Length: 146
Ligand code: HEM
Image (cartoon, rainbow, N blue to C red; front, top):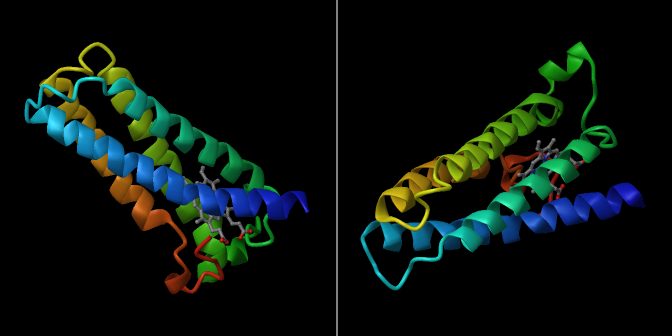
């Protein structure tokens, strides 16, 4: 029961996180180009960073509950088990670190075109990593769209 709630929350929250990252990147892009109407970037940066951290916390809890995470050497021979044991967690932790570094490195320049450009680069790299690490249903990992 607890595991199902976690799994559904983790799965559904992916869409909110992806939407918030896209929205933030559109704002950074416009601000980087010097659009004067787009200046308050902090809320977009913070919201997507917090959502990412919540996903990491939900994921880490599930890492110890999921039947797909098996701590055994044989797991490396099975593509589903290897994906959840090392690939998904590894790439997602790297993406979370990149987002957090992006936030902290631009804290004092966030509302300038230069800061927006830096944020755009950090967030774009993390976004690509996240897209590549999501267990999309078409990858044959036994997952759902929601
Ligand atoms: C350290 C970070 C993370 C860990 C440890 C983690 C762990 C896991 C685990 C163990 C599962 C398998 C659950 C199961 O089917 O039993 C899972 C599934 C999933 N994770 Fe993560 N996760 C992390 C981050 C993320 C992030 C950032 C996203 C989204 C952007 C994400 C999206 C998903 C999705 C879509 C599923 C499939 C859910 C389904 O079966 O419908 N994960 N994750």
